[in-house]
Length: 140
Image (cartoon, rainbow, N blue to C red):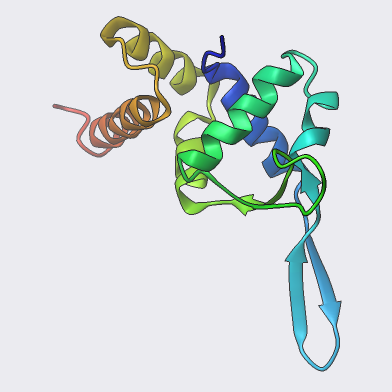
Protein backbone atom coordinates (compact mmCIF):
# COMPACT_ATOMS: atom_id res chain seq x y z
CA UNK A 1 0.00 0.00 0.00
CA UNK A 2 1.39 3.36 -1.00
CA UNK A 3 0.81 6.39 1.19
CA UNK A 4 1.71 9.94 0.37
CA UNK A 5 4.78 10.98 2.34
CA UNK A 6 4.76 14.80 2.63
CA UNK A 7 8.38 14.98 3.82
CA UNK A 8 9.46 12.96 0.80
CA UNK A 9 7.52 15.30 -1.51
CA UNK A 10 9.30 18.32 -0.03
CA UNK A 11 12.74 16.70 -0.15
CA UNK A 12 12.27 15.59 -3.76
CA UNK A 13 11.20 19.10 -4.80
CA UNK A 14 14.20 20.61 -3.01
CA UNK A 15 16.51 18.07 -4.65
CA UNK A 16 15.13 18.74 -8.14
CA UNK A 17 15.42 22.50 -7.63
CA UNK A 18 19.04 22.12 -6.49
CA UNK A 19 20.06 19.75 -9.27
CA UNK A 20 18.26 21.06 -12.30
CA UNK A 21 20.31 23.44 -14.38
CA UNK A 22 19.63 25.36 -17.54
CA UNK A 23 21.95 24.30 -20.35
CA UNK A 24 22.61 27.28 -22.58
CA UNK A 25 23.42 26.85 -26.25
CA UNK A 26 24.60 29.38 -28.80
CA UNK A 27 23.81 28.93 -32.45
CA UNK A 28 22.33 31.77 -34.37
CA UNK A 29 20.07 32.28 -31.37
CA UNK A 30 20.52 31.93 -27.66
CA UNK A 31 18.77 28.69 -26.69
CA UNK A 32 18.36 26.85 -23.45
CA UNK A 33 16.98 23.64 -22.09
CA UNK A 34 16.98 21.98 -18.73
CA UNK A 35 19.47 19.23 -18.02
CA UNK A 36 18.05 15.73 -18.00
CA UNK A 37 16.85 14.42 -14.65
CA UNK A 38 15.27 10.98 -14.74
CA UNK A 39 12.72 9.98 -12.13
CA UNK A 40 14.32 6.54 -11.81
CA UNK A 41 17.67 8.11 -10.79
CA UNK A 42 16.35 10.26 -7.94
CA UNK A 43 16.13 7.51 -5.27
CA UNK A 44 19.89 6.98 -5.33
CA UNK A 45 20.39 10.61 -4.26
CA UNK A 46 17.62 10.84 -1.67
CA UNK A 47 18.42 7.96 0.64
CA UNK A 48 16.10 8.89 3.53
CA UNK A 49 13.19 7.25 1.72
CA UNK A 50 12.56 4.04 -0.16
CA UNK A 51 12.74 4.12 -3.94
CA UNK A 52 9.01 3.38 -3.96
CA UNK A 53 8.28 6.46 -1.80
CA UNK A 54 10.39 8.70 -4.03
CA UNK A 55 8.90 7.44 -7.29
CA UNK A 56 5.38 7.54 -5.88
CA UNK A 57 6.02 11.14 -4.78
CA UNK A 58 7.22 12.07 -8.27
CA UNK A 59 4.11 10.52 -9.78
CA UNK A 60 1.83 12.35 -7.37
CA UNK A 61 3.57 15.65 -8.09
CA UNK A 62 3.07 15.08 -11.81
CA UNK A 63 -0.64 14.35 -11.33
CA UNK A 64 -0.95 17.44 -9.09
CA UNK A 65 0.76 19.61 -11.73
CA UNK A 66 3.75 20.45 -9.53
CA UNK A 67 6.19 18.94 -12.04
CA UNK A 68 6.26 18.93 -15.81
CA UNK A 69 7.67 15.69 -17.19
CA UNK A 70 7.82 13.79 -20.40
CA UNK A 71 7.75 10.02 -20.63
CA UNK A 72 10.76 8.32 -22.11
CA UNK A 73 10.40 5.91 -24.99
CA UNK A 74 12.01 3.01 -23.18
CA UNK A 75 10.66 -0.26 -21.87
CA UNK A 76 9.63 1.11 -18.46
CA UNK A 77 6.63 3.39 -18.96
CA UNK A 78 6.99 4.82 -15.44
CA UNK A 79 10.31 6.53 -16.15
CA UNK A 80 9.99 10.25 -16.70
CA UNK A 81 12.38 12.94 -17.75
CA UNK A 82 11.68 15.85 -15.42
CA UNK A 83 11.41 18.92 -17.61
CA UNK A 84 11.06 21.42 -14.77
CA UNK A 85 9.22 22.36 -11.62
CA UNK A 86 5.92 23.86 -12.75
CA UNK A 87 4.71 27.24 -11.43
CA UNK A 88 2.40 25.48 -8.91
CA UNK A 89 5.41 23.47 -7.74
CA UNK A 90 7.53 26.59 -7.22
CA UNK A 91 4.70 28.27 -5.31
CA UNK A 92 4.23 25.24 -3.08
CA UNK A 93 7.97 24.89 -2.52
CA UNK A 94 8.41 28.56 -1.61
CA UNK A 95 5.53 28.32 0.87
CA UNK A 96 7.09 25.32 2.63
CA UNK A 97 10.78 26.10 2.17
CA UNK A 98 11.38 27.26 5.74
CA UNK A 99 11.46 24.41 8.23
CA UNK A 100 9.24 26.43 10.59
CA UNK A 101 6.53 26.94 7.95
CA UNK A 102 6.78 23.30 6.90
CA UNK A 103 6.37 22.01 10.46
CA UNK A 104 3.37 24.33 11.02
CA UNK A 105 1.84 23.20 7.73
CA UNK A 106 2.21 19.52 8.63
CA UNK A 107 0.86 20.11 12.14
CA UNK A 108 -2.27 21.83 10.83
CA UNK A 109 -2.71 19.14 8.17
CA UNK A 110 -2.57 16.44 10.84
CA UNK A 111 -5.09 18.27 13.05
CA UNK A 112 -7.63 18.73 10.27
CA UNK A 113 -6.92 15.51 8.39
CA UNK A 114 -5.81 17.19 5.16
CA UNK A 115 -2.69 15.32 4.13
CA UNK A 116 -3.26 15.47 0.37
CA UNK A 117 -1.00 17.58 -1.79
CA UNK A 118 -3.85 19.96 -2.44
CA UNK A 119 -4.62 20.17 1.29
CA UNK A 120 -0.98 20.78 2.19
CA UNK A 121 -0.70 23.43 -0.51
CA UNK A 122 -3.87 25.19 0.69
CA UNK A 123 -2.67 25.18 4.29
CA UNK A 124 0.79 26.45 3.33
CA UNK A 125 -0.70 29.23 1.19
CA UNK A 126 -3.02 30.37 3.99
CA UNK A 127 -0.20 30.17 6.52
CA UNK A 128 2.00 32.40 4.35
CA UNK A 129 -0.90 34.83 3.83
CA UNK A 130 -1.36 35.04 7.59
CA UNK A 131 2.37 35.66 8.14
CA UNK A 132 2.33 38.39 5.48
CA UNK A 133 -0.75 40.00 7.03
CA UNK A 134 0.81 40.02 10.50
CA UNK A 135 4.04 41.46 9.08
CA UNK A 136 2.24 44.26 7.24
CA UNK A 137 -0.20 44.98 10.09
CA UNK A 138 1.62 43.97 13.29
CA UNK A 139 -1.03 45.53 15.59
CA UNK A 140 -3.77 43.17 14.41
